[in-house]
Image (cartoon, rainbow over all chains, first blue to last red):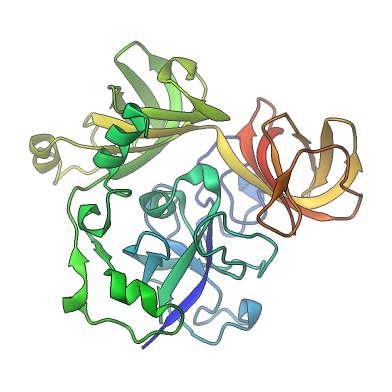
Length: 138
Length: 212
């Protein structure tokens, strides 16, 4: 096993939230989201979870990610800068975006490899930063 | 470090080093961090298991007073207790006094041990939570610029448009670590991600905007 270096952002899922903030499909109104609880049907903003780019049963893999995880499988995600990590279950398929944001931290990662629910993200980095550099155990 | 920030960091256990993490988390030691990308995965025994659990809840503020807040969410209601260590983001770093009825909150906090054990069988019961960190009306928009004005842009989201307002505190990133103030330098068609505070009606006052 090894680590992949990259960047984590956060996203919302589920049917609850401030207007238009709760859905996984580019902030569409909740009733337009299909499904609202992510590709795995288990995603909630207030529970630990993540969107991984290559999920069993959901081709194609985003961003040429070769490592595949299944819905519900736990992934260890570590903050590159603090070394603190959590294990989060796969609850969705994403993120679709691969680059474009530079993490404002010690590692300045640019490749977006994982999206975390706010509940998971907040354990490792303040939500107001939006992103941080991570090491994901594969 | 400001005293409030120090207290919050200690309470959250995220800034005091790997040994001060949270239950269910592990921390890499310095040697492991130094290995960098594609390092051999450490075995479980080489991690430092951490302590100090936190919980995360969300909901809409239905009432509040000086000591606490009552949220409505998918589980019913949730009481929050405010204290000296509670810190609040509401577009900027502020205090709990800035939180208003109708705000949608993300809350990181802690249940008392006794309350926690009593609550094991009823996870969704309204057991008060000591709020450590609160984010009010925070959210993302990801879309394509459809119009650029002096102090805002319009963003096409795939099924509609929203206005993203810029302010003097909005950090605009165009491909790097250095931010700049918005002076109209975006163009129609650019893909943009905006993080900020939702305002009534669903528009946003951005705090960070990335051109992707």
